[in-house]
Length: 144
Image 1 (cartoon, rainbow, N blue to C red):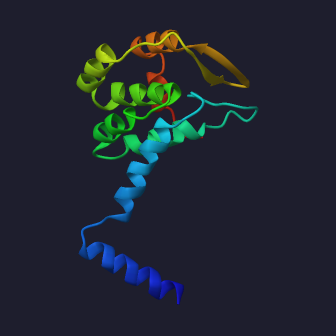
Image 2: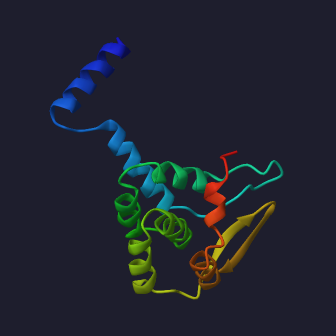
């Protein structure tokens, strides 16, 4: 019964040109923008990948990554904005430069996880680190 309903729903959505995969992909970008903590590299005792980094990597695998990241930026938290800027720097340097130069740089602190330490750091300081490329290498490492 469940299979029949799922198959029927899939066929109906396909007839209207609606892609379930596309909807979940844009949801990943929106979820990334809603991040409450910025963390790249291993975190916690086990050094596992943060959920934010996992979402960023998923968005970057998409052919329309730049568009998804830019769309997510409109409602992003400051932590989400940091992820988005790291992603744009990687996939679309021209868009990154344009956005980096035009966005306000608030003096607020944001939540950051580095290894086993969770702290608050100045948003501007993290922007400077992104701009200097200090987070670029994290996305080149294999996922853990």
